[in-house]
Image 1 (cartoon, one colour):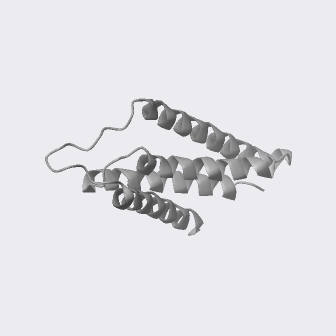
Image 2 (tube, rainbow, N blue to C red):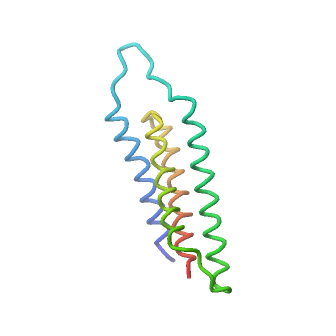
Image 3 (cartoon, rainbow, N blue to C red):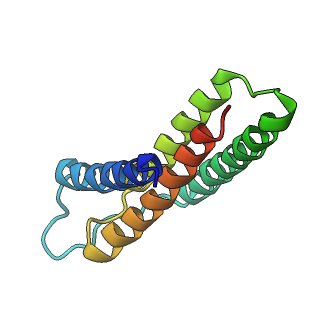
Amino acid sequence: MNPGPLIAAVTAATLAAASLAVAHRLRPRSPEGEAPPEPHATLASIGSGLLSGFTLLTGFLIATGWAARSTGITPPGGLYAADLAAGTAVLLYPALAGLPFTPRYVTAVCLFGLLVGYTTALAFQLRP
């Protein structure tokens, strides 16, 4: 069994949870009795765009990496760097958008991080 994707998945989940914890620690406290401010509505569309771009790029790299085994044509290395940057942005986005540091959100972010890390590692491993 290849431990690379599992290590990448755990690393991505750790990055996502740690960024959420750091953002929570650095975020100014709300006054007593007042609800914390809601994230701006524009942030929802940014997250969707980041996730769509990451999904499309990773899917493309997985498909072309698999096909490159028979064709010998590989995607440029810059696309792999862009995929890594997009994956990192997707993992950091919940913390930057102001998601609260609660067990519910930490669990969701960690599970999402596992998926992002595993698929990114798969894209890198399928490159011939």
